[in-house]
Image 1 (cartoon, rainbow, N blue to C red):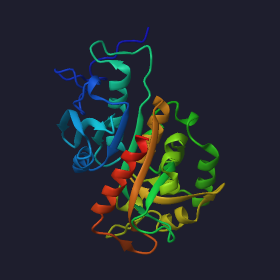
Image 2: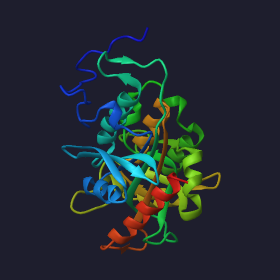
Image 3: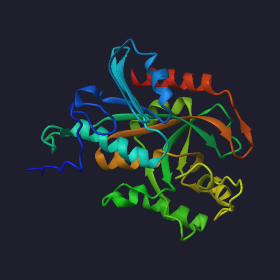
Length: 291
């Protein structure tokens, strides 16, 4: 029998909801759209024909409703892989635990999770306002190294090739490459620029931005831009996908990230008025996941 989890390990609120997300198992749809920006949840739910769940706690806003008859949960993660660690574990708890007994369900439920985000391209030929589709994530963070079975989901050949190519500094955590869901990637491939997404643990130094503090590796972006492995290249920077892909793979959930590329680090282009393009991506995602 699966052991009972201690209360501090799986905290359940008085109303039967999980600690941070404030959702109950019945609030969660099988298809989930995650976004970093809490405001974007409302932009998604504006397309719903009905909403049967709403919750808000800190940066975690969730709404579950219907689009073309399909039940969908829209959920904000906030920024960063640390937040995604919270979100993925609590989504998995909602899907796969009895929250009253804190015991894992005998039959596991697999979620389909789509991240809609904004991101910056690092390749000169990938224009601003295009959609970047993450076939893989390369984690420049350290999150997945805390989990025992991570080596089984990492593309070790790609990881070693990149570490050698980039002469990765020994004082930084070792990068890791993880693949997204083939099925979900194929849904969006015709509309997107497909490639590897680099997930950084910060917005400034970890993404090669120099304001006043000197960088450990000033050539990091050039190394990312020039990396090639079996037809794959790194297309963009963001701050969540490696955690989503890694934890999703460990837990048995299908994951994909698709981002509006609102800037290009190679050309210096930036679209300050990108809301219209993001909204067109929201409509595209909703249409594709309800085919």
